Image 1 (tube, chains in turn blue, red):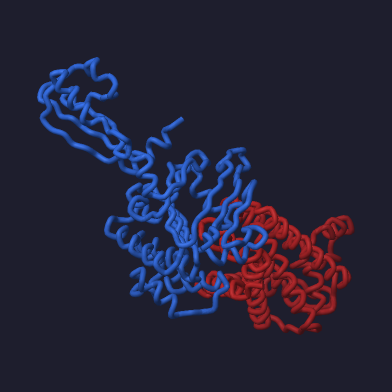
Image 2 (image 1 turned 30 degrees about the vertical axis):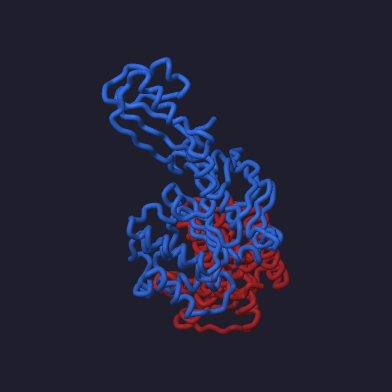
Length: 310
Length: 253
């Protein structure tokens, strides 16, 4: 079977603002149909700019973007009607009711009225009992869900969530993840940006890392963990040492806990981990061991090492 | 055409009108009534006739235009400025709508509101002075053209403005003086010839003159010229709006 064409295809995309600031530099990115894609990056990396261009809020400077096979400029109607966008900031019409604002979004996207669908969306997001409330009376978390409801009102095939859980409490965050998983199960492709590595680790099928306007990595989450996932062994010592003995220099050990422990990095996928010989050489050097523990590096460590790299 | 989107924007904007009914409709009616009391009854009683009609009657078309102009600009500029200000514009920009549809929705609603307002003011005027409209269809034509043109103008101001001061600046510093000096309260023929020439540079003169002609068949300039100038201004506003959306000026960056 042929691989399905990507639902979003970004080619050679650059964005330079009027001030001369280059927010995006030659971005190439394909999003697969039906996946949850997490876009990670520090503040100002270009996450929101990239989303804004794909959704039609900002003009691109160079390159092109196809959504569902439609060019976002030449065939903007077809492209945009596939997309639901939940921006990062809480932009709401304070004096409208929840029902009115969600229905407005559906109309704006050219869809005929469908109260049953709106009802389902509001119920899924636990907003049904607030449907007649003015938005100004809602809490921040509810407003966030209203914005998701607006984005889902027109039955999009692609949902952009720009920092969906920023400022949302833990309970609600878990609830939102359930909603996102439910959407994926119904066939919606989801692209989320986040600061919470944990969120990407838990939710995403694939992860892209963007920094200073450039995509520096796109990988399957599992592959990424595997590829860059080093383990570290911490050897707790019975006594204290001031320096690593010269006989152990080959292991690149790092002193820790004020000389009461040493740390050894190794790769579980390598032919040999070097653990056995390390322990041998420690004994030969007269160093006695009180305890051992190992730790898998998290996505957060990987991320930090990527964006810190020069 | 995404008619459902036009309908959604139009109804959304009209809902805003009904929500703010007091300031939208009542306050212009009150201020117009004050003009009648001051200019029509108090001062007007000392002025016999202008161009063959009583002064109170003479000022009605000018007063209607005064309100329609200022309200069209205010409605349309606020209508598009506010989503920019609170950020909800993101949804309009990311929706599958063309700029023509956006303009029809916003400008259509703003113009509708000021047309309704113009008709209410005429009805209010009829309580104070006898009112006869010689050419009702021409009256409506001028009313609709003016409302649409100045709503477009307001839409442009709303997009251009990046603060509330700018939103107020053009209406206060340019439109209000032009309207007052455009013959709302006097016939241009009453001015000394030098000032008369200067006045003819004011586009509002042509709007008020044409509108007044549809009421009383008296005009400062020919009706064809009035119509031509109104259509010309409409064309300029349309061209500006086209340019704004083509370049994404103050919207997409």
